[in-house]
Length: 180
Image (cartoon, rainbow, N blue to C red; front, side, top):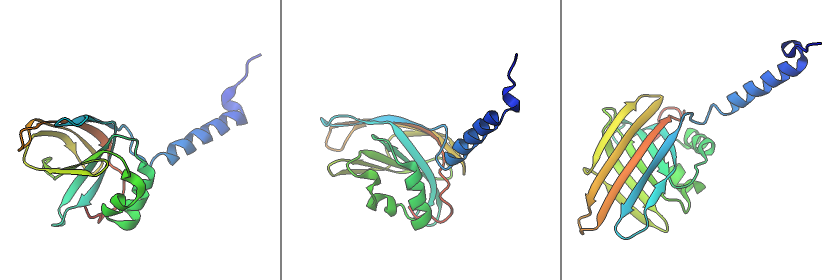
């Protein structure tokens, strides 16, 4: 005696559950990979393990892709909801999303150039870098960003500074008009 799985209500239930699971995760970027290190002087290296990206506007209302790499897991679903509601990158900085978390933020312009690079390392170390390093952004579309940023040099004070950031992720759908 053979059982026909496709003709049973059980199969329909399994398919429905699978489709609901796929739909529930669609707000979170798929195929994400973020990694990298930031070495600064004698401080312990920061290892980045997670990535989140979205489209925004800079102060001149030019489109940029904001890429965030973090040392800890990010609550991407909650971050997307806040950005959709408040339309400002500052909403993420005010919220609990980066509390006691090392992260890097890269702003990629339409040509694929890194427009700005910001690092935060707890308990309160900030560093803005521009005009150093090499970037290779292979994809920067309305739906996906992929690239690599690298710098191997010294700070103005002579400390070693090595940056190696890799990212590939679908962009979160935060809607138009998010200010960076």
